[in-house]
Amino acid sequence: MTDLHPFIAGLPKAELHVHHVGSASPRIVSELAARHPDSRVPTDPEALADYFTFTDFAHFIDVYLSVVDLIRTPEDVRLLTFEVARDMARQNIRYAELTVTPFSSTRRGIEEKAFMAAIEDARLAAERELGVVLRWCFDIPGEAGLEAAEETTRLAVDLRPEGLVSFGLGGPEIGVARPQFKPYFDRAIAAGLHSVPHAGETTGPQTVWDALRELRAERIGHGTSSVRDPALLAHLAEHRIALEVCPTSNIATRAVTDLDAHPIREMVAAGVLVTVNSDDPPMFGTDLNSEYAVAARLLELDERGVAGLAKNAVEASFLDPAGKARISGEIDAYTDAWLAR
Image (cartoon, rainbow, N blue to C red):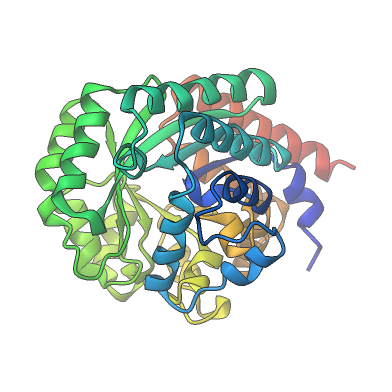
């Protein structure tokens, strides 16, 4: 097969499943750890590679929360957000829906309006200075229960920042049933937000059905177990409900045994709208360009096929029609020029 890495590096892209704190590069994590020396997170960027080696999903959550604890001031929030956008710009990511967990910050003492101001200031600066358009998904940390759900909903609905487009549910799935969050999603949807919960990553297809039926999901975060239910795959394909697929993440958290066993092939074969994403890229030693290369190998794609994956993300995004047309046009123009060389 042709080496697609150079093509992927320059390809205009959108990303739909990537976490705010989980996108902190080793450089930024080490800087934040140095600011807060009482943390157990290493200050040496090289030591972070070992720190970010996970034994299972529960261990990943534990490490993730230790990094969350480094975000203690509005200045920390602003720094993190803008630097994440800088890393995206380096990968030619034109648009990203960044999953933000405001409850994790406000309960640690960051004043809620200051938090909103920090992410919005970074968002506007990223678009102005880097050409990266950011939008927010506020997600409920499921492991924190209904208190977190109530607070996240209030922050999303009552203090809604301009960049907020969607409402999600993350954290562990095992023991965190999706239906209990229905009233909160109902409120968010009534306020005009889109529903994008995680489901079916470390649990079975029933979790995905619950997300669809109870939370009215418009996209599904991960959804790896969907392939175990042909009726579910058919439903997702028929209704163009996209799966936000994060291959390397699924291996790192042991949700999938190895890349060659990843169910992305079955998803695509069933006609499901598949998007490729990086989830928590520095924590998993990856980035979006690397995830596209993985997907291209697993799906045996050429340049046109990879461009099609990029256009899937644009289609499944919550961009306005003009924004979608603009990025899709950039993808086509780039691909045509590349193939004409």
